Image (cartoon, rainbow, N blue to C red; front, side, top):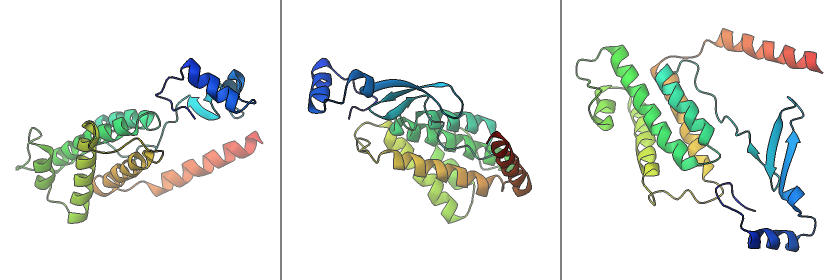
Length: 196
């Protein structure tokens, strides 16, 4: 099956269609209407390629600068898990700067290397380990050949890192307003129930 970042040359196209007579250009690349919203979508070999999934939703209380980077990372998750991880490292940097500023730490400088800023937060070891994991994986993702992102499961790293970033926000910035979340879930349930 061709991957999104590969070009299907004419020889490969011919091979695909000859090996499976049912594989015609119509089945390899199709436009469909979404059964839910009616908008168009593009499918290649049965895989949705447009619109691109939005990934994981950013934690509600994530600082705006970090949320913009997080959302950009999520928009790339399917297309480039490696890019997603590199951007999540930048997101962690924004979160660390936010927490350092909010705590008004005297021994914190946003111009320091990230590892030193993480140490300056003086947070529990488990959170330091999560921040460090995000920093290291994000750094490794930014450098070719350090981490292997070629496999079908390469997106798992990006998903795990995204959940870790959201968890860090919950622990460092504050828990969700559970009443508000429950109200939103109930409103969505009622809206969907009324559609059927």
